[in-house]
Length: 295
Ligand code: OGA
Ligand code: MN
Image 1 (tube, rainbow, N blue to C red):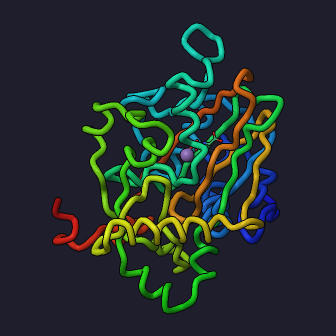
Image 2: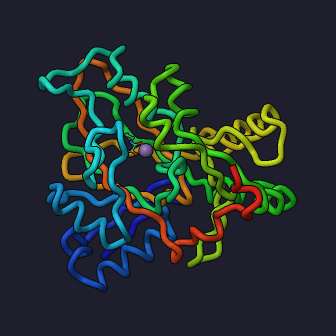
């Protein structure tokens, strides 16, 4: 297996290993796992992609999420991101489905709004538009390391609130349904996720984050905006231009990502599997002290 860095100090291409190797072979899994801990975003090319091969690969990293209410693929281990409607045609740009896709174009990390956040997401492109439709990544680990030490120490002991409804309402009021809102109440996480393997911290932020525990709402909101802006500063991203057979996995503890727009009339279909974080991935240290969690 060869690992070749491709981004600005994070993200790497992985050659000489297949999805099936990782699913079936401990050495292949261990090598990929080590590369994942180090590089945060891994790109596998020319893979034999199917729902089965993707899920078997993903399962190696931990328990797969079950897709939430309101998303395509609900109740399965797959999230289907597409603007192709039930009749097989691309939906209009102002339709609910298109707007839901648009919410993925805000910088975020997957599942920070859930009771159990995600370790990794594994994404494959099944239908790729001619233009646009890239996925862009930044390292929130590098963003954390760019901060001055006093701020780093402060944020290690700060907690932020995340809410699915908050990110959706940035696209359109009422985009999250009452059913989704009921299933996904706000959750609170430490603002820095320390990687248990290498000890490096990363800002844990997303479009879902709306408040900082113990801060005036407006002040906390501004702080989140400033940190998001610093984390996504020009020149800090890796942009993945999808080709058939590509599979990209990323560390939701140490990155943010966003989809890039594509012409509304062009079809795009992506399939994601998402693996929940466990104690071994540092989840326990992310939970706020009890008195802060009470709500
Ligand atoms: C995701 C996501 C962006 C894209 O799969 O979690 O945000 O480019 N995707 O489709
Ligand atoms: Mn996402």
